[in-house]
Each structure stands twice: as C-alpha cells, then as structure tokens.
Figure 1 (cartoon, rainbow, N blue to C red):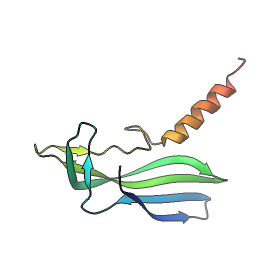
Figure 2 (cartoon, rainbow, N blue to C red; figure 1 turned 60 degrees about the vertical axis):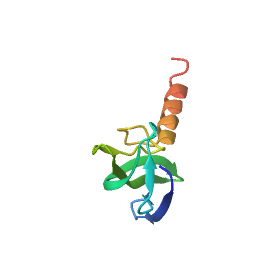
Figure 3 (tube, rainbow, N blue to C red; figure 1 turned 90 degrees about the horizontal axis):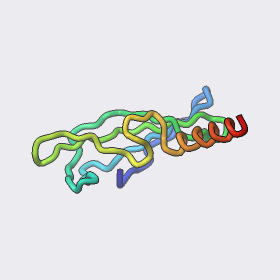
Length: 106
C-alpha cells in the first residue's frame, strides 16, 4: 500500500504495543496487474509484528477494498504481509530463522 500514514500508537498496561496505520482519503490504489480504483470500503485487519523490546507488537490497518471499472470489488494487498496471514513478513522470517537454528544438529 502506498501513501500509508501512522495514526496512533498505544502502550497498554498489558505490555503490548498497538500501531494503527491508515491511508489518505481519495487515494487511488494500483493493483499489480495495473488496474486501479479508489476505496469502496475497508476491512479492519491485525497482524502480529516483531516484539518491541519486551512488548508484543501488533499492526492494525483499515485495508481498503476498491471498486474496479468492471464493477468488481477487490481487497488491496498490503506490503508487510502475505495474503491471509496474521503475521508480518518480518515476524514470519524471524520465526522461520529461529526454527531452523533450533533444529540444527538434530
């Protein structure tokens, strides 16, 4: 997603960091196949990110769905996560690396 801005962060007493990101109203999103459109509506999504010191870290985002010229509605993919995953790419890479190192020599 282009033109993403940080809305707010929140550090609760439960030692969690919640980061909220959003997009600018009226922004035109371009899909990988070069089709484009403006936000039709949004879907609230949450991803677990790498820990921030001892705090769990979560990204919250209103992910836009865009209406294309043919009338179809498509969910925009975000750059920090695979489609359908509840984790950021960095978190997944860290877990895979940790698992690989843990299993060395077995």
